[in-house]
Length: 278
Image 1 (cartoon, rainbow, N blue to C red):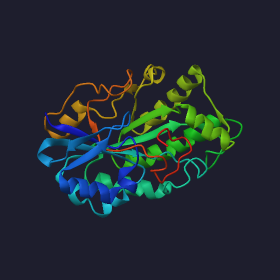
Image 2: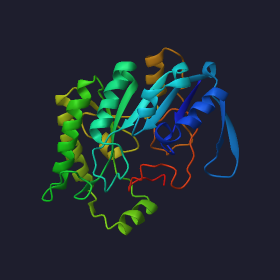
Image 3: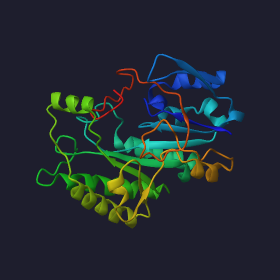
Image 4: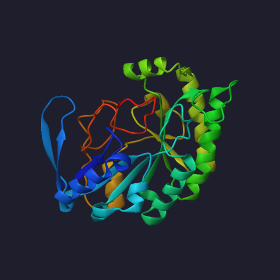
């Protein structure tokens, strides 16, 4: 069975470790540290053994400039564009720049090879470029509609959403930064997501979510699989694993893949306040 490569949930490799990625693809293998112990394992990157590479990033400038050895593989882009302020995402590329990148990816590859990630959803004042202090949700809805309008015009019609997951380290980081935010109740989540669905429908966009049973119950939302073997198989015409990834949370529906990234402190240069991988 051909392997699906995840590159990577653990850090933004396309934006910050692109030379390393190209060297690894040239060598046709990479040694990866197990994040749960001190062991390492080898991942075979020979093109004939790889079904597809799922690239996760907030900036695909390097890929657009020079795909290099990536041109030998089937590529799927998990592109996060949230439109937050610099307080939440201090070093993320300007939204207009990333929108242009997505448009170029859609032209060079195909819109079906791109999934727009509008996550995590964080309701706040400081996190918004144009806050609405009387109603935190309104600002997020406005950003979503503006992005949805632009992104759907590129032919990209898949969008993954989730609410902020308050890992202890994330909560402590936000507290230290004096960042105030609204933790929505289940009912508030349902109401907000219902409005997101209404907006998405106007632009022919389908909303997906992963590991979020509350959101999955909202009409119009589909249970997503960030790495979806069946979808990738249909997209690229090669057989891929449909087996559940045993290394993920129970609620996660992702297909088995090999992640080649690593958690390493401040390894991601975006510096997002909400990042669970830091």
